[in-house]
Image 1: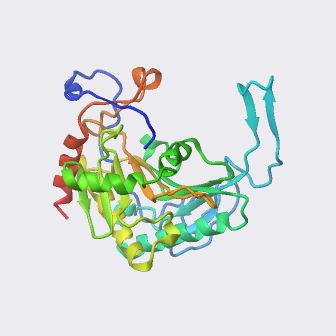
Image 2: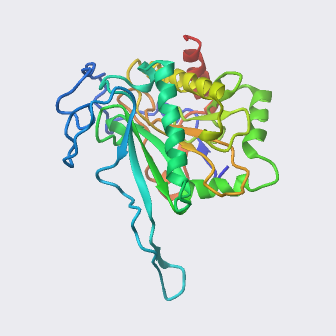
Image 3: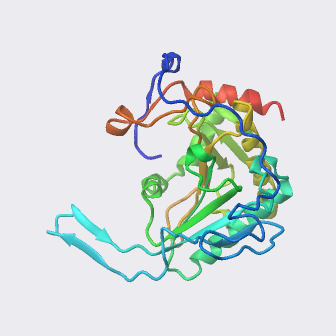
Length: 324
């Protein structure tokens, strides 16, 4: 998909570890409502705005956005060498609280509740691209302190940009070819069957052959949809069930809430490449709640490296999927 290699080193996870460890203990269950939480209904946020007494999912503009819509066009290329180059970037940053309840992750929510979140993702995608000024809409969730979540209330973010972000730009090269790479890849995975975690009539969850993170997964619609708003009612219901099931599987790996970063890659507005909607899940834990995967050294200076095969990871996740 990105024309990059991954070094796979089976057995490396058995090496002695005397490095940094995480807390390693599951925290006590959070309360249904936290009076000190910036995202709970009715509470004041850090920027001074007060949340309404919302009863479902709730979206608002990020109080501390990385992107702003009122940026003037500007560019610079010092020496015309393409080495010291900058361009102005406009955009918008949105926050979506999944639920008014402080204690509900996606895996603990009901399928109808997740479907409501999914519908809101679709509405936001269409609204953010309606003017034609913003093209790429990135929906992502950072779950858990290990992934840099600044607030424990279950929520995600949506960043919309005028230009295509780097990771999407890499994938676009593959999607611009004569055949859809994800349609081809799904057929190859079905022929082998080793890396499929679970599937339904419309969706498949796979540990991709090129996975970098220990329990990385790829969620792919079987039908060739370009973006979330293209999904029909039945497909959205099925996707909501898939999101819930995958979140619950992750929490079974170490019998505790599993941190991850996840996000959807969907077609940028007015892009003619043959995009195939998909979601990436990047969870960092390696051996236990206490030992995570670090991307350092050779990974930063050479290429990514993983400590056990994607087939081993898929087998472990698949066994936990059977508990549904």
